[in-house]
Image (tube, rainbow, N blue to C red; front, side):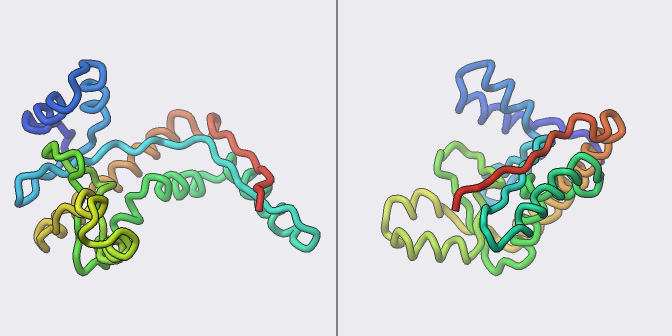
Length: 196
């Protein structure tokens, strides 16, 4: 995989959106990849954060001591299990979930609510999400019109799936590099009683 360099187009769009040089540098630094869609919008991918703090909740109940035991076991395993660390980070990045959602989707919608020429991977919706928006707010509501701004072509969806797979591989490589450098020494985990 070649190292990603932001295009001039995405840098210009970010500069137009953020006047502050500090925010511009932050946003450009967070970019991991981009894809120009058929309609001219740019789909931006940001580097997922590597999570090192994990908390596991349990319920307090006379009949459910299993919840307490499981939460404590998970908290203990988080500081010892490399596979658990990788799986938790992949889950929290949302990349695997997005990949699975796009693979199954019949139709993919996007939101360009800032109307700035860029779309984030977090603003992609499948037909189920669109139905929920339509049901909750109505097709003619301003909220619906703002968040469901367009439909992606099948070829765009296939390109996005390929990019998400690439991003997932890049993130796994980053996680492995992190583990080589630090191991699990910086991982903190705990359990807590969650209100019910």
